[in-house]
Amino acid sequence: MEVAEEIIWKRKAWDKSYMKMMENQYDGMTITPSLQKRIIFGFLENETDIHLRPLTKLQQDLYNQQDLV
Image 1 (spheres, rainbow, N blue to C red):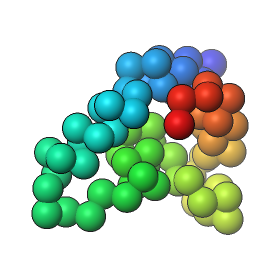
Image 2: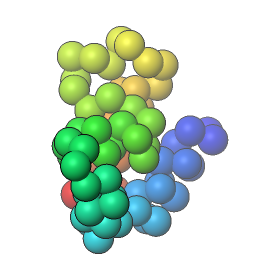
Image 3: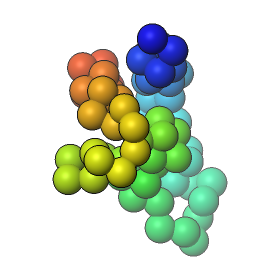
Image 4: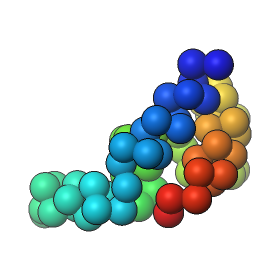
């Protein structure tokens, strides 16, 4: 599944140091960890919002299994 593979590759490519760099680059804007995940990985973090985008639950599960954050 292409979506699953994409999440796995992104998790490997964008680690905590990238997230920190992203915070610094968008200085003056409020970039929360939840918003970072939405921008980079393309899914909504809040479990109650999984119905808003297709495959969100799958993406959340894969993200959490990769043990990066």
